[in-house]
Length: 189
Image (cartoon, rainbow, N blue to C red):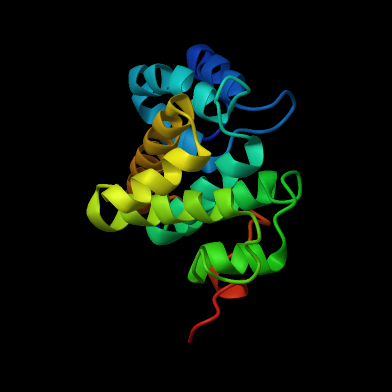
């Protein structure tokens, strides 16, 4: 049960405008956005950063971005955001079922990861989750495949999706209808 219930339509004009700005045209607002909109000034402030994180100006590719987001949300055990990103982006970025299972409950060393750069992204996301840092050896490996803007985008992307995961989990945002669930991809009992 939601601890902070999402707003339901009809929305006040300013809320409706903000929610519309956060979604693709014609797409109803997701539960997380309707929940965050209970604090409209915060939601407005978050929107520009969110658009950057999901937009074309980010230096990581859409596929790389989604690998990092899905891994971060899985490690945070945030089924809501994990499932929402898979629902909207998994097909677009060509994540295979094995890759989704690996991001959910596996390792960057799983055989489905054949691109070294993608393995490094997962390793960095894991290190940040586990230690809030990136050790020197992993930093060198990341530096070998990412430039400074990409490294900075990677660090802040992981942090942003930790924050999103914290909010979605603690507020108990209900999964989006039709979104995948962890149980469909968990490999360990």
